[in-house]
Picture 1 (cartoon, rainbow, N blue to C red):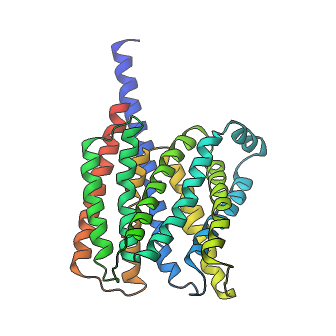
Picture 2: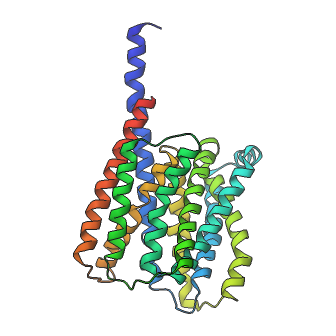
Length: 315
């Protein structure tokens, strides 16, 4: 190949890579924004329903949503081929991590507090993801680390600065750190799965495994389910929109970005929750929350820049 043609290929491939990465970033941000509606939606849920059951029904309803989605968008032969060639050990690992994330998060929030639990789980996940990606041989760039740490600090200020009741406990901290680790490991496993297989089928398998794992543990922790008829619309919204559609977007997004960046961009979740808390629930957060918002968005801008630069260099 001549020097001219090599240059032409290089110049044409770089925009293609950039577009793919930008699309991945957009899908992950959309997913995080949908996750951010969870807290506001749960404020309308009946108090009789245990948070453990809320987490379980999110998995179950999302799994049903994926079945409908696959039925409408994929041919049976394609689904069968995907299942036949699926990396099942990795899919089961991702499902176990998803089930563990739901249970440990709600256990941590119950033992600590909503503010501390959310800050620890959401804030630790990107750090876990970076460490795991480093362990598996793909070192995130320094700019990614700097942006992620800035976003994590901002996220903690944003969450803790909203004026919610704060308490801590050793068990709560441990559960929330375990939740962050479970989510990070899920994201890295899911990244490998969707790179090789159809994201819709992969996400259905992962959530089905998670739901099967979570059912007996949820029953043991929360007892029989108690839900009034008026509460089902909240559970359906959480399962279909805030979980099903959101994680489908997340899986699509992971095709264009690294697993660690996908987890870092998930910090858009508390940003959305913050905006909805002001607009819908009429919260009046203190100045620290707004400082946290600025730091978080600045950090995510650095993460996005680092991801785009890495994608261009890899091309």
